[in-house]
Length: 304
Length: 288
Image (tube, chains in turn blue, yellow):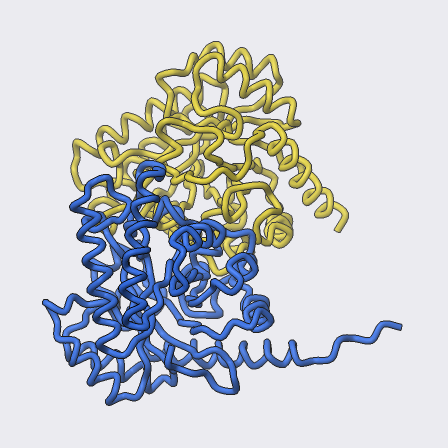
């Protein structure tokens, strides 16, 4: 990632979806500008198909507002790498390749998200053949990404959004099977709060393979309003020497629009003003990071 | 507090055939529980009279639960779909009564699954009308209905305690109570304490499940805080342990609940541990 945080701390990012998922030039410019004004080092932007949108608009807006990009996507039922249908897998392969090309074009060194299976409510357990197909496809994409200097992130999600990767242990095993240096584990605390022993367990499990973090509350509302143990998480990340991005993710039903609200399962309004949440969240994370850094710098207590 | 402790049948077996019911009832008793919660998703396989006799012989109480299905959903706009949902509820209420139970709970208001649209005003009105009728029928049998608050991936009708209280208010029957589940609360609420205080004396049933639905204490839930809150509102109702693993498979419910991982393989050991864990939390409450 080209972004850098202050004082040697991880760079702080924000998911563009905070302002909604539309990426037509004007909305993209507004969102990128809002993220920069709120004080973020990085914005996570949706991977767009270059045949549908001109990447130059995104690149120009990033440059204009002075903020670094990361790129993310979630595969769906029509381009699911775990599908038994080769045509479906081929569409997923194409979409990932497009995401890598888009990232390289706009100056992003990262493409992450639900890159392993469809983000959907599966109604059957995963299969060995489906997993093998996803591993082989990502190995191929990783080789292509390496040529662009792009790292691929494998974001594990909760049981309702994937049947394949629900924990850091599963994601790490998957990444090791892909076997490419530019493939990393992507931790999201919303999903971890549902699936893991606790929110710091995945930091230890993923180790040096941890490449990207989504900071998200247990209910996906504004940071600090839920049960995620932020002091523990941030101390664990700093103690582990993590220097990758920490990107705020929170979505609101009335901001993302009806179709995305249904996709994500947002049935109630948790907040309404994205600028306010963006500013409060970056203040919150900076304060929490500073406190975590202080706690690690403090001398150990002397035992009598 | 004199809370009865319960356990969900899917800890022991995936179905409700006569052989499975005999096993479930034996293992529930052996693990030290006072009552069994049975999901009625598989009710055609159930021999009601035999199960009741087994439960009575074992000295166990019974609570039944269920969710609905997308083609039999009382929150639908389609009267035929609502009618099928209402029929399932009537049937399940009758089975609960015939088993000797007084408590019928769950996602009685919705299909158990990821919705492809938000709840409509007409759909919500259908929930209120159907459950008002069901509550009257339950009252005639001295029974209570529970509104189990489920997470966003399992229903779009009620995800929080505040949602559930509004729905119960609209139903407006004294025998419709709120059912809190710590697993769902972890996904939707700001903490595990305030919802208990908000619901107060309208709390009628409690599910204890870890954040990942595995062994109690192997997750991060603040169960101590939750049990303190139960004491604060003088909750004396049942407390039922719920846990799921791919090791015990129901042909329907496992996929409905998205159980992909093996979090444990020995149901009786898990149940005995959960009983000790919950008993210990209740003892600490009494000592406080």
